[in-house]
Amino acid sequence: MQFKTDKSPLGGMSNVASVMRQVLYALVPGIAVMTYFYGWGVLINIVFSIMIALSFEAASLWLRKRPLKVFLSDYSAIVTATLFALTLPPLVSWWIIVIGLFFAIVIAKQLYGGLGYNPFNPAMVGFAVLIVSFPLEMGQWMRPQFSDGHLPSLLESLTVVFNGVTDVFNTQQWDAMTMATPLDDVKTELRRGVYFSEVLQTRDYGFISGKAWEWVSSAFLLGGLWLLFKGIINWRIPTALLFVLATMAFVVGWIEPDVHQSPLFHLFSGATMLGAFFIATDPVSACTTPRGQLIYGASIGLIIYIIRTWGNYPDAIAFSVLIMNMSVPMIDYFTRPRVFGETSGRKQ
Amino acid sequence: MSDDIIEKSPKVNYQQLIMDGLWHNNPGLVQLLGLCPLLAVTGNVVNSIGLGLATLFTLVISNASISFSRHWVRKEIRIPFYVLVIASNVTVIDLLMSAWLPHLHLVLGIFIPLIVTNCSIIGRAEAYASRNAMLPAIVDGMMMGLGFMLVLIVLGAMRELIGHGTLFENAAVMFGDGAEFLTVQVIDDYKGFLLAVLPPGAFIGLGFLIALKNLLDGWLEKRKKSSVSVIPVAVENIS
Image 1 (cartoon, rainbow over the protein chains, first blue to last red):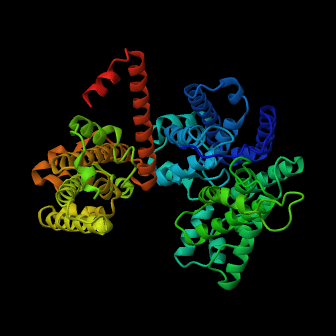
Image 2: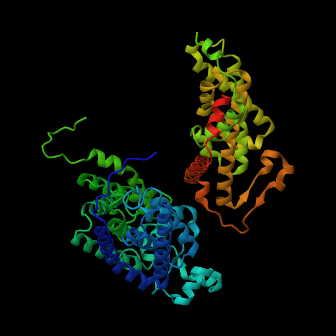
Image 3: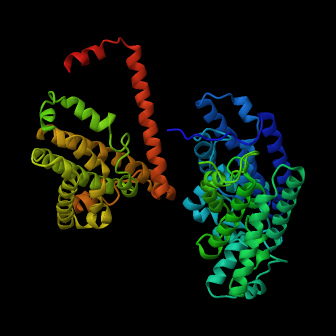
């Protein structure tokens, strides 16, 4: 059975490559800031993910008897791998990356027909598989640089990734080096009945949402704004997403003060900025009609807030994007713009 | 009445019945019927065998009784009649299982009564048992049931192996306390891959099984074509 699908809204292949390259450039500030705070683990994740993603892509293209050079040089697998790597905790084991990318590239992308035909965002499928299957490994984030402890060197990082933690650090050292993300931590504390303002007082969370996270988020925001400026992405999805997320946080915080995170905390923690500008705007799996894009972005923001506040997972970008990916055909159907010359009221 | 047409059915080709049930018209892989239990229960091999056997018995008994009574049931009321027959069979099997295999019955829970709604059973009743003699109907039910059970077991083994790294976990639930030796820890010190045990794992696994079957069929077709085309003629002569 084959579903009839529309062509990708992007033009020819050279166009795809240049768009993907611009996206990679826009990710550079975010990657730089993350590497500054979290050390070599971030870069190892990215480089290793790109290598694995390209191998999977090449293998499936070869099995599908498609031209290798055309599809490998369009940078789409590299963008997928980079976005996927940025969602992983630094120093995660190599086999976790391989499993995640197998689901991202082979199952979510190539089995559905390759670039332009995948209904789901490949990077988010890979991440969702991992967070569902290996919650323990995926929850171990490094402590950012300036809170006591040192960052592991390149050699130590490589050993941790490819040989396992026990080869380099004992359990005590490792526990001292890892911590829950602020988003996770605050949620646990709120569940225990601690007020949000108290959590902020007892923790050293910088201006808004953790010293590392607020800078990482700002760097992704900067890259996203550059993409907007260059016209690579559309303003509708990120704006609607961020607006609804902030509004929800504001309204719920106004009804029940001090037992929920503040709007700013929501915007600058977790993967909000990365998700709003780089993930939700994926041209293949997002809505294509103008009104549809507003609905799509707003719904993602709403679902992020719902899962973060009342769900079990600390962050929800992946699940929200995947849920809305499923609704894209319906939203696009009901928000088709009126064709010039057509009178009001849709033909049956 | 239509009975005349039914009675004129040619000699039964048992070989074809067997091949249809197990492969060409497999309820799980080709007809895609009864997917709800197929996807929900196949978390491990033992559950798969349990539900597979229950479905197999239901299919055989319901096919037999529907074929037996096919001359006395008016066409207009046949569907409610099938449902009644299947429901009473399933109730009997449900009660028997709760008496003899209480632990397995507890594990499978609602999916035993839900066999009533398994479309492959009412499908066989309508498509085969209601218009064929009793013996072929029984063979058909048995083969369809075996085909379904085979898919259940393969999918269950896949998901248990990938999800937990074991095979035949909880064998005692099904075969009694003496069967604990059946449990195999295939991969030592396995951390587990939760997705395979969760519902998405069932969907993805079934998808891969269907793809594998289509791949095999494609290969067989190719081999048939490349060899001399005597076989189709021979088949025509037999039938």
